[in-house]
Image (cartoon, rainbow, N blue to C red; front, side, top):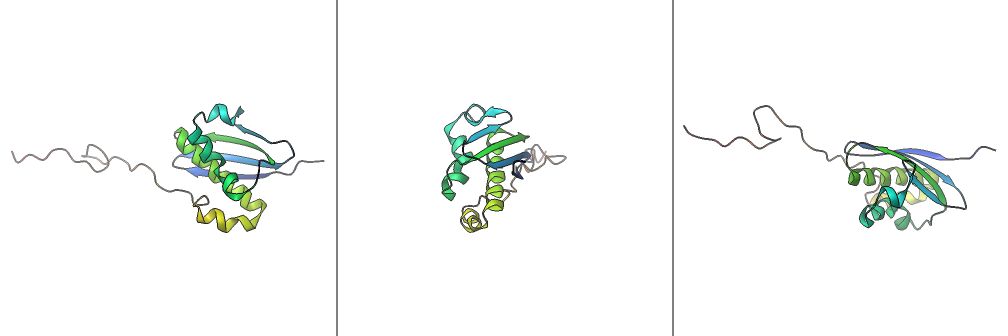
Length: 131
C-alpha cells in the first residue's frame, strides 16, 4: 500500500517551502527534519505556520513534512503557511473561499527593491550640494 500525500510549494520573498501533507491518525509536523517548535522558536512564528489549520477549523489530523530554504525565518514561516494552505485547498476545495478571504492563498509579492547605480540605497540619493 502506498501512502497518499499532497505536495505543494509555498513562496514568500526568496523563501521556498516544499510541503507534503499526508492524512493520518497520529499528527507530526517536521520542518527541515526538526520538530516545528524547534525550528520556529517564537510563538508568533508558530502561530503564522499553524494559522491555516486554526482558521480552517481542521485539527491536526495530518503528518506534515516541510523543506524550506532561502530568505529569513519570518518569510520562511509565511512560505510554509502558503504551502500548507495550498495543500488544504487541494484536499478540500470548499476551504478555498474562507482561506482566500484571509489572504493565505496569495503569494505575497513584496520583496526588497534593488539598489540602483549612483544611489545609496534603492531610492535614497546622495545629499545634494549646490557647490
